Image (cartoon, rainbow, N blue to C red; front, side, top):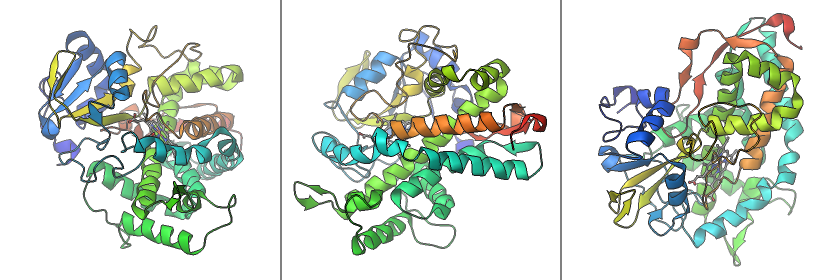
Length: 411
Ligand code: HEM
């Protein structure tokens, strides 16, 4: 069933549907209403799913690995088939104690120093995209499809050591995986499936290993071991799939949401451009206010949650964006404050699965917004009704038409 055909939601407390277009458009209002009336909402959809909306409940579930498993992190009609502790895409689908082992393998490539080394490449990439936009001569462009969406794909392709030109292919695969979890992927270009693509890349890296310290992320994984045993191919494949899925739509959404905000709030746009000293705070506030990621868990025990009877096998959504708007956790939670000083937001998660790519995501977001505002300081939404936000667990603008004031651009 496509999202536009979802049955209407009559009551968000007892029949919510996070994949319904109305949720995509009105999520913050729905969370506010639920927080005041029914802080743990329920739906029979997807085989039974719970939606807690307070910071306290989201945080408690994210830290509780006794009552919940991560083997399913994207809610769907089908339960995942690859069991914990490894799951389909380690470490995000892994449970303790294997989770810590799988996570540790990735700490080094996403540490601050290697991420810093990618900053100039990211800036060049952003400038190249803006050169293309300005070369068109038009004052109209789509900041989501012509700019934001290309940045994370290019950076992760470079890190993995696969061709940047495969970016469109990755996006197609990712959307198939997110929209129809569990189904086989097919490349519309007539190539093989996602698994076949990844297997070929792994085989190529295993056949031609690069010397230690000189390789890319796939070399890092194919040369890694767990207590002397090389990683299974399915582990390497699942982790690469995770990095593509976790790294692309999330960061695309954050860059797009920040540009949407600046296009529609001229005072904040002027402050971001003219007061570089507030930019670090602004990036954190973009992440808090427009947090793109909601994750899921599956209950493994029958238990109570906020007085509600959760059954083993039920899905639970963890809406980190709703936690970020909880007035119990933030002063003026419903206001975007561009230089907010206290901002311990949960955009990157709150428990043991806290985002491993947060250094990279922050760098990409900051470089993307700095470069855009330096080159294109004055822009606005050209058609606010044509802005289209995604639905489901990753929220951000997928179409973002803007008008650029060409008199002010830096070519
Ligand atoms: C603004 C961009 C991003 C946001 C908001 C974000 C958000 C999140 C969240 C909320 C989680 C935790 C999920 C949970 O508790 O179940 C997570 C986990 C993860 N993220 Fe990100 N992410 C972003 C970008 C990235 C990037 C660029 C990468 C790497 C390419 C990445 C890699 C990961 C990985 C590997 C995990 C799993 C960690 C674990 O299971 O221990 N993320 N992310």
